[in-house]
Length: 168
Image (cartoon, rainbow, N blue to C red; front, side, top):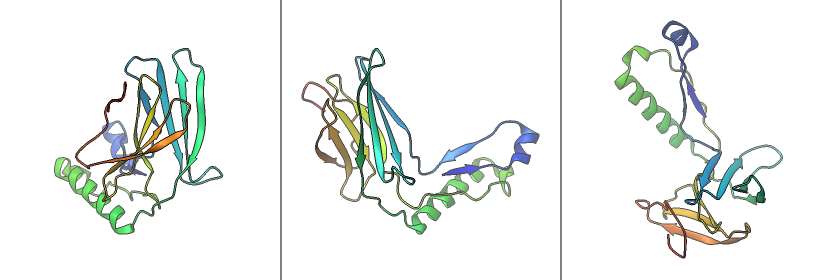
């Protein structure tokens, strides 16, 4: 899902610009002690879809686990996508009016990307921030072996930034 600015403008002015209005990762999280890295990639189409693959690596590059987790696709309503594109174009033109006429169509996905972020604790637990809903911000929690332990929902004005030693 990118907004691409016309190549002619950038041939004349140099550079390029891509904007992800509905980013689909991949997402990386590093434990505070630097001993583990979590990589989350979701598949919206193709033979692995719909799923997210979570891979956790140790400090030496060893794979601690790599597992696939299914998710239920949530359609991205056309009105929501159109509203986001319109807001993006309005914002760009407010700052750079000379770009009027060079913004191309902005492709958007048919479904909401399921993952928004990932946090990994020093003990190896992985907290995958799922897309926000009206009920709040949801986190799929995996233990150090990659087994799901539950889903936590927090208010939309809260975000899990660090986890460890029994605290969030």
